[in-house]
Amino acid sequence: MSRHDRLHTSTTHFRYCTIRSSRSTFTLSFDGSNYDGRLSDPNARGDFGSLSLTRQDGSLSPGPCLSRWLSLYLGEECGNLAAKRDARFRWTRGVFVLDFDDLNRFLTQVEAFPSSSQPKWTHEPFDLALSHYCGALRAGHHSFPSPQVSFATCVEVIQNLHLKNRTDRDFKKLGTGAIKHLVEDRLPGPKWRDFRKKIFMKDVDLLAAVRSQTGAHSFLHTEKGDRRVRGALRAWYERNGAELHAESMADRSLRDELALRADGLFKLGLRLARTALFYYLRDEQDVPFASHDWQIAGAVDGLDIEIPTP
Figure 1 (cartoon, rainbow, N blue to C red):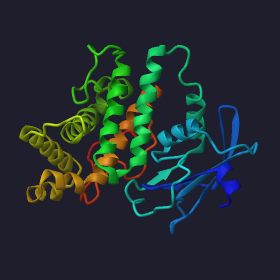
Figure 2 (cartoon, helix red, strand yellow):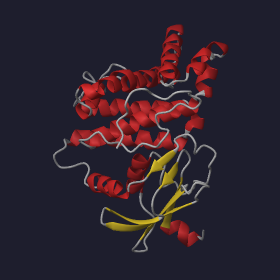
Figure 3 (cartoon, rainbow, N blue to C red):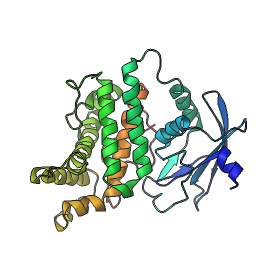
Figure 4 (cartoon, rainbow, N blue to C red):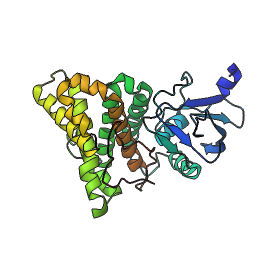
């Protein structure tokens, strides 16, 4: 790619999934600008590994605002001009089916965010949450535990925004169950009770335990904290059909166990942060997930509880 093309085109090389689409070219509109998009780098199945955007007016490549929203929608880092093709981990999330109509609806919604009806005090915390999310994506699963800490902070901020907790006195830490209010608002009724309690909230407890025990703010890594993380990990394996992972935990230290499952924990944090952000932005339950977003590598059986998918 020439220097001119690099300045005027933004290319995203997907690291954790491939894109499935009925067409390889498309157009997008955002904040008064129109973009020509192209999917490329197909694999043997015809799924794409890269996405390029070019402004139709010939000006410089898409700015950070659009890139951040695309990163949220796709679950992949967008807008990193220094990124290079790396297909080693595309199996992690599987296949992401790209619905261009839904993507355009999403961009139309968020280009007006924040709206005039939202209190000004919420603007900066939300921007902080989205920044933590994008920072975790850029770090990638190799940087464990940094991305998990950032994903956890993102969810923590969103749960307090939903509860309108403006002061330190009212602030609820992740792991106290406060996020359940947002999830119950988007997934009400008995149909989703098992998912809310047995899947989503348990995943949040694991993310909170991992952050508490490995995050830079925690200088006292206690045996009690280790037992909490081990218990949450074991429960995570078992409810996802990965009992063999649970059985082998005794053979490794907690540090080695977390390092071994860094890709799965990265995917868990990504899934929770995307869900929290989407639920805060949209008054609906639909979050565009990839085919393996809810699976643990090596699991014999998948979840036996219905997952809210578009």
